[in-house]
Each structure stands twice: as structure tokens, then as C-alpha cells.
Amino acid sequence: MLASVARNYDDDPAEVSGEPGDWAVFDIDGVLADVRHRLHHLRRTPTDWRGFFSAADADPPLPEGVALLRRQSRHHPVAYVTGRPEFLRRVTRTWLAGTDQRRVRTTSSLASIRR
Image (cartoon, rainbow, N blue to C red):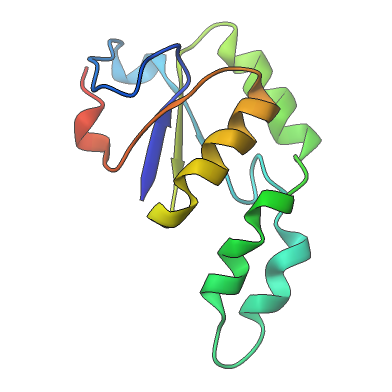
């Protein structure tokens, strides 16, 4: 699982502050990213998860999700959580940066995002 924090952090681990209720948390697939164009990979037998995830770079943004993200990010720090595999880290960072117009720091687990 990848998790990321929408702040101008370097890739080095950094402490992130905020009370639990202060954060706006967003999933990526199906909330910010429109995955409908790649669902056909999951409808076959056997399920083609690699094909599904490999097409993630072509996801168009979901306007409703992105609008909510932008509204919430004016008042709250934002955390992204996703079930995307590690091999999509760079694709996900690039996609988020293009959608949210911010740099993101990614980490492999929520444990490294400390209060």
C-alpha cells in the first residue's frame, strides 16, 4: 500500500503534525481517478490485476473528487491512501502532482506518517 502526504516534503521521512480530525483523507482509485476504462481487466478469469494497475497512468481525474480535494485542502492537510502496488509509486506521484498541482511525498506505510 502506498500512502502520501500532500505537502512540500522531500523524500526523506518527515514528521507530519495534526490532530486526527484535522486531516482530509482521500483514496485515489474511484475517488480521484476514474478507473472505469481499466475495469475490463478485473472482469476476466483469471483476474488481471497487473493489467488493471498498469493502465493507471491513463486515468482521467474524477471532477467531483478533485473538486472536493481542492476544497478540503484549503482548510486541512491532505493524506492520500491507496491499495496500488509499489511498482506504481512513480506513476501515482506523477498523476497526483498533475491533478493536485502539488508535490507529494510517498511512503510505504502509514506508520511513517507520524502525528
